Image (cartoon, rainbow, N blue to C red; front, side):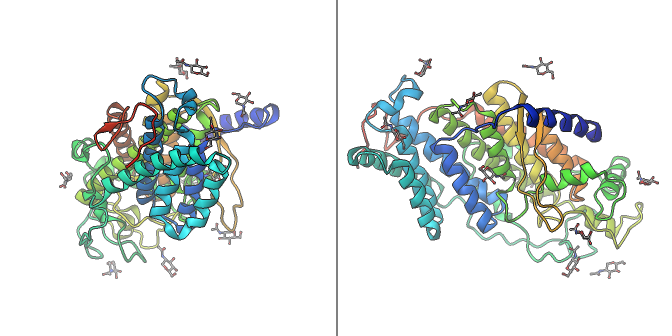
Length: 434
Ligand SMILES: *[C@@H]1O[C@H](CO)[C@@H](O)[C@H](O)[C@H]1NC(C)=O
Ligand SMILES: *[C@@H]1O[C@H](CO)[C@@H](O)[C@H](O)[C@H]1NC(C)=O
Ligand SMILES: *[C@@H]1O[C@H](CO)[C@@H](O)[C@H](O)[C@H]1NC(C)=O
Ligand SMILES: *[C@@H]1O[C@H](CO)[C@@H](O)[C@H](O)[C@H]1NC(C)=O
Ligand SMILES: *[C@@H]1O[C@H](CO)[C@@H](O)[C@H](O)[C@H]1NC(C)=O
Ligand SMILES: *[C@@H]1O[C@H](CO)[C@@H](O)[C@H](O)[C@H]1NC(C)=O
Ligand SMILES: *[C@@H]1O[C@H](CO)[C@@H](O)[C@H](O)[C@H]1NC(C)=O
Ligand SMILES: *[C@@H]1O[C@H](CO)[C@@H](O)[C@H](O)[C@H]1NC(C)=O
Ligand SMILES: *[C@@H]1O[C@H](CO)[C@@H](O)[C@H](O)[C@H]1NC(C)=O
Ligand SMILES: *[C@@H]1O[C@H](CO)[C@@H](O)[C@H](O)[C@H]1NC(C)=O
C-alpha cells in the first residue's frame, strides 16, 4: 500500500463527509455506556492494554450472558425487554458488579451510571434485574479465579550488549510488562494452537532482516527526515499511550461506529464480548511468542549492531519503546483480533467509518478524524504506525495481525450462544433466586 496516496484520498473523503453529513449518532445502549465508563477507568489508571482487555471481556461477557438469560429461548431479542427480567437492566447490573468488584475505589463512578440506567424502574423490576445480573457477574469472576494472571513469573532479560537478536531491556527500562500473561488461562481458545502459526522472527542478520531493519531505522527514527508528515501523524494517531483508553478502546469505538444504531442489546453485547475475549486470548498467544522467542527491539538492534548492519549508538525511536519483547507486535495482535471479530460478525471486510484519536501532546492538541473502508486496512495501518514509531520490524506486524485474525475466527466459531447457571439454563425469563 502507498500510505501517502491513500491519506490524500482519505482526506478528500473526509472533507466530503464533513461538508454534507449530519452528525452521526453512534450506537448508544447499556453495553456501550458501560464500555465507555470502563474506558475512563483504563485512562485514569493507565491500565496496559493486555490487562485491560481481560476486564473488557469480563464486563461484556457478563452483560451478554445476562441478556441471554433474560431472553426466553427463541424469542426476538429486540423485544426481550418485555419478559419478566428486563434484559437491559440485567446487563446494567452485571456491568456494574464486574467493575465495582474489580475497581472498588471507583464505586461512586459506577453507582452513578447504574442509577441513570435503572433508577426509573419499579422496585420489583430492579430486584429481578439485580438478581440475574449479579448472579452472572459473580460466576464470571469466580471462573477467572486462579487463572494464572496473578502469579509471579521470574523474568530476566539478556544482559546489555548481550546475544545478538535477543531481547534486552531498552534504555531506562526497569521491568518487563506482564510476563505471566503467557501462562494465563484464556477465556475460550487454547493459545498453544497458535504458538507456531507464523514461524517466528527473522534470522539476524539475513537479507530480509537487513531490509526490515533499514526500514524501521529510516522511517522510525525520532529525527527521521524520510518519514512523511502523514506517517508521523499515523504513528501518533494509533499510539494510544498510557493515559488514553489504549488500542482496545480505540477498536471498541470503531465497533460503536460500525454497528447500526438499531442494533439490539443482545447483539451489541455479543460483539463487544467477543472482541474482549478475542483480544485477551490473542494477547495470551502473542505473549507466549513474545516471551518464547524473546526478540530484540529496533533500538537495541540499531544501537548494538550485529556484525553486518552498522550500529548507531545515537538512534532513538519516534515513540518510546514498550517494555516487552518485540515479536509479535501487540498492537497488531490486538487489531487483528478486533478486526477479525467484526469481519466475522458482518460477514465482510468492507465497511465505512470515521474515527478520531485520543492522542495529544505539547505540540499536537488533536488529530483529525480518519475514514476507512476495510477493517483489515485499518489493522494494517495500525501495524505500519509501529514502524513509523520506531518500535517494530515489519515481520512482527504482519505475523501479529495474522495471529489476531486467526484467534478471532476461532473465538467466533466457538462463541457460546447459551449459558447456564448452576446447571440450569435460564430460558424462561424467570428471575434467578439462590
Ligand atoms: C440512526 O441512524 C440513522 C442512519 O443510519 C439515522 O438516520 C438516524 O437518525 C439514527 N437515529 C438515532 C436515534 O441515532
Ligand atoms: C424482531 O423485532 C423487531 C422489532 O419489533 C422487528 O423489526 C424484527 O423483524 C423482529 N425479528 C424477528 C426475527 O422476528
Ligand atoms: C428496561 O430497562 C431499561 C434501562 O435499564 C429501560 O430503559 C427500559 O425502559 C426498560 N424496559 C421496560 C420494558 O421496562
Ligand atoms: C555496550 O557496547 C557499547 C559499544 O561497544 C559500549 O559503548 C557500551 O558501554 C556497552 N554497554 C554496556 C552496558 O556494556
Ligand atoms: C532515558 O532517560 C533519560 C533521562 O530522563 C533521557 O534523557 C533519555 O532520552 C531516555 N532515553 C530513552 C531512549 O528514552
Ligand atoms: C532519506 O531521505 C534522503 C533525502 O531526504 C535521501 O537522500 C535518502 O536516500 C533517504 N533514505 C532512505 C533510506 O530512503
Ligand atoms: C471513545 O468514545 C468515547 C465516547 O465518545 C470517548 O469519550 C473516548 O475518548 C473514545 N475513546 C477513544 C480511545 O478514542
Ligand atoms: C512457543 O514458541 C516459541 C518459539 O518457537 C517457543 O520458544 C515456546 O517455548 C513455545 N511456547 C509454548 C508454550 O509452546
Ligand atoms: C467489497 O468491496 C470491494 C471493492 O473495494 C468489492 O469489489 C467487493 O465486491 C465488496 N465485497 C462485498 C462482500 O461487499
Ligand atoms: C514541540 O515543538 C517544539 C518547538 O517547535 C520542539 O522543540 C519540540 O521538540 C517538539 N516536541 C515534540 C514532542 O515534538
